[in-house]
Picture 1: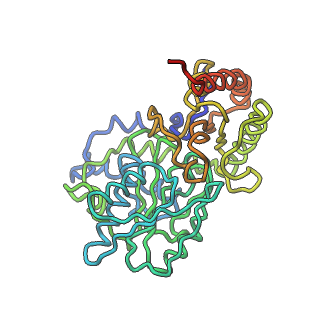
Picture 2 (picture 1 turned 90 degrees about the vertical axis):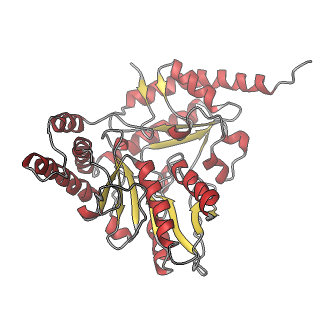
Picture 3 (picture 1 turned 45 degrees about the vertical axis):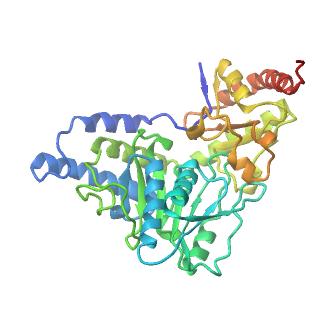
Length: 392
């Protein structure tokens, strides 16, 4: 049976979400219609919004449903940038190196098209954001940052960075896509302006996410139309997807007291096993005992081997893993996260990410550890052959 160790890319839909989704698909009615069937759909939608809000520590009105994490990030970063530059020159965006490409590509587009000036904040060797200075922040539009690095699993000091930004009057967006479901999120307690999540990372359906937008925060919308969702994101809302999202969010939140500890024990077993099976392997990101690594993530660099080669060899052995973000799958580039952490390009090309989820078991880890030594030996031989001089 295939072993799935790529839960950070997407995780199987929870049975509760499947049941909620299929049940809601039979409901007829546009939630913006005023007749009884429309109002039934509206009730279902708003109850789903309340359930999702309860898992994020925010008010229901602050939950803006989107098509996923990428749209939520685009809406936050572009929308906040445009809103902050409507009546004053604030072209600077504070953004750490190693962010998800949904953020990186959005910021780079704003630089090309809108004259934004990104200030790329450095990471330390374990992927932590080094705090910026807010001494001269009059021209800063916003700070955007990950709560958990999606590649190497580093838990970022969001609360401390947000407090410094708030004291300087700088709005903050948090990409919490990789954190949601793995650690508690208290939007009100963080004191940030916006926060992005995605349903399919927690066992909900693909195609729905949310931007949590504080009541006091302003964004210029990406989509114009009927004015749904506080005029922030127009369009007829997907009731069935929202209901399934809520079911997944509620079930996941109920397990937060126990599931991270189970996954951390499984992750530690995997890390110990990889280092024993391939002594050359180097763990990326914080050591597990520091508490600064998300429970589900184990990321390694395998010297002398290409990550893509290792991925395909493990796949042939029935084990699904990743070289990094699924959004960059198929693009043969070294990990920009590892480069931002100070790794060489050669090291960054030899990376593999193993991520665990609700369905992961000790047997899954054992299957990986059984397949890995042979796969590494073959990939290392292929790497040496690639570097050998060729005769004309």
